[in-house]
Length: 256
Image (cartoon, rainbow, N blue to C red; front, side):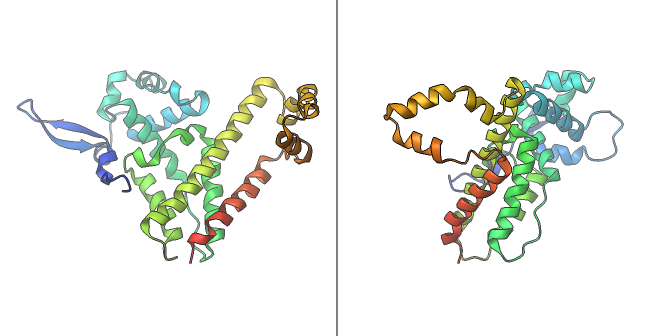
């Protein structure tokens, strides 16, 4: 990895406890998940815990997610969750991996621009559905099976174009940052519309007198230009496509 850390450095661990009351072999979250995927007689499971956390985060934001609140949603005791997740950080890790279980990358066509654009749209959709994802650093999350599958599929889209490993990561990192940032802004705007019952254009109209005074002052010519010349596109999907095209133009020199 670029910062010199190994992939295992970002994997969450708890520890097995032997009969002598001594901690022994470290056990990662994903090893525990695999062990719990067999037949179960109990109501709890890693998937149920993750889905409960996702529902809370989708409705109230990631800050609202806690072990206690997830346990309450599952009608379970808080301590019972610790059989599956050792901490809130592991809970979030499990949630992110569960979200990515629905993420698929279309088969590679050989047209890198088409392939990345389609992948960007899918990342955009999943992030807009779960806006709290935009605040998560993929590099710091454990190597869950769904996240790892998604990463492998994305890397395959940019393989074979003469790029170094660092260049491949730069391309995907730039794409991820743009898409999640854009989806995050869309989510903020949606929340603002719900809170104020005003669209972006309607909110600007309420500031019309203030904006006119700023323009007429002559002190902010660049601001005046974008206000008067901008199309004020109200469809976020069209804005996303235009800006995605600009990003892909910038990345084109990396492909050979």
